[in-house]
Amino acid sequence: MAVGKDEDPVETEFFQVSSTVDREDIASLLVKRVVKARLAACGRVSGPVTSVYWWKDGLHREEEYLMVFKTTSMAVNKLVEYLKKNHTYENPEIIVTPISGGSAEYLDWLRVETRG
View 1: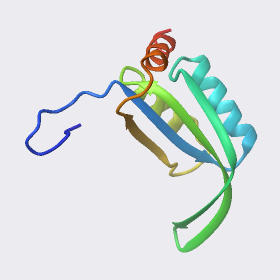
View 2: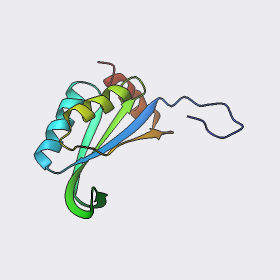
View 3: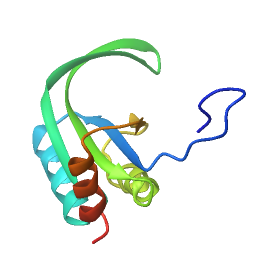
View 4: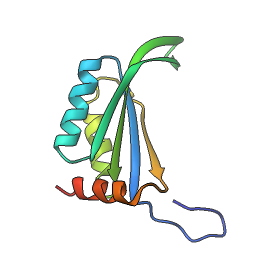
């Protein structure tokens, strides 16, 4: 990821990954399985949240459950692939956001817990 046009690229070690599903039990199961597999140090389920989006031929409004995971550069691609493979949606929202900083103790914990 480049910081800016004239700057050297910066390697990001930590990421937050988010996705949504339509049922709380599915969200809870996915979060549990991801954390158990150490693809993320932690996961959170929030909701229901209301999503409004275009899909195929129309505008939709649905209740969904938001999953948020904290992970590392070593595990982020495996986490994304796991979500794609096990998601119930045809085209799931999977967003990866770099974490540019935070509590050193928390980030150390995140690093340790994703190593397995």
